[in-house]
Image (cartoon, rainbow over all chains, first blue to last red):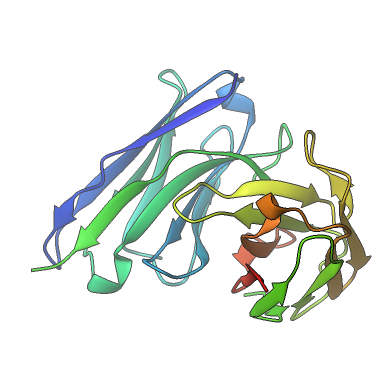
Length: 122
Length: 106
């Protein structure tokens, strides 16, 4: 059974940093691209960042480019999102998600973590 | 970035109704289009990928059509559990989501 366990969300001051983690199980982690999607309170879904299975290729939304870094440790089956220079508008539930097809860097997202809440406020 | 526009933003319907939600891409995305259902406080659920392929376990009353820039999601016989928010997503170039369509009980 595929499982994705998000963690690391917290209350952080503007300008601060936070690292999110997503532990994966139930599939061959190294062969699937992974993605972070966020959802601000009462708002829609927003793509944040994606990474290839090997970790070699990374992709970012304009809103987070230069501030967030996606990475993965395939030996630990874990995906990360390092978030720096956080702003109030980054406040959201962050979901990690697995792409549907083996070998694809971005694709439909078939499994999602439960989400972790990041609140940026002084 | 590819912009996805859904219509309507909200929709009222009754159980047993047939409803259609549309999604338009700002450029040709071929069939790289997915639909998701999200209920309050829950994780999004993949319904359809490749514009028309039903994800495993999704009831056959859900269907998707379209290619290029214009796409539709149809629910043919609304059930009580279908009242939720629906999102389209393109994955032709990175990812982007539509703003969502909230389907409410009339």
